Image 1: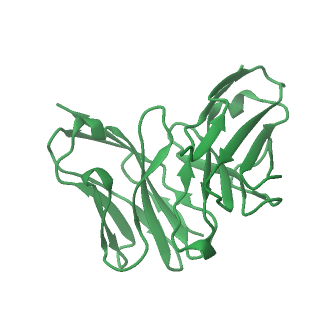
Image 2: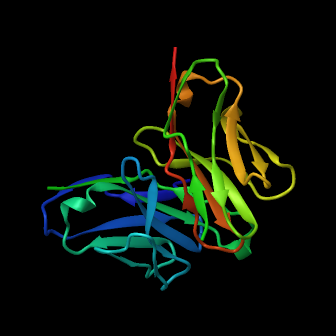
Length: 116
Length: 113
């Protein structure tokens, strides 16, 4: 019963490098989300997806891109990493509202990313 | 637009003492409310949720929360805390059929002997 799995768990990048964070869920959830967590700022939504093949911008989308080619996977890309993107990144997923009211989000354990 | 306010960024408390973590929200429609807990170096886990019905909601680890519509609050309480409750707690709100949650900035509960 894996739930939401994020890879990698840790990564150090140099400024200007690119990378992709992978999120996989095995709960057949329609919705998937990427957040970043910074001290004193709680969780901020980067991008989200309400179904396979769809994505939408969240609160802080600049510098990130996402893709949802398969229902179970949600990829977060950094095209040219910057020190301001040093953060802990969390992926989450949930059922859609039509699958049941008040569905909570389920979270992965996070990816700790440092940009030097 | 909905928003969530957790006024207390840190709450220190002695073991076996009661605790209340405050959460206020603003929304123009009916809402679903959640409390999540984050232990160090882990993701968020659902503590409890309010969907409808009884305003007193019981969750895991002995926590409970009360929904107060007139005061737009959803405060989290525990009558006797344990060292293992040391963690960060997040309140979140979801409007009706909305696909997104709005999170508060979190409250760090520090339990000491």
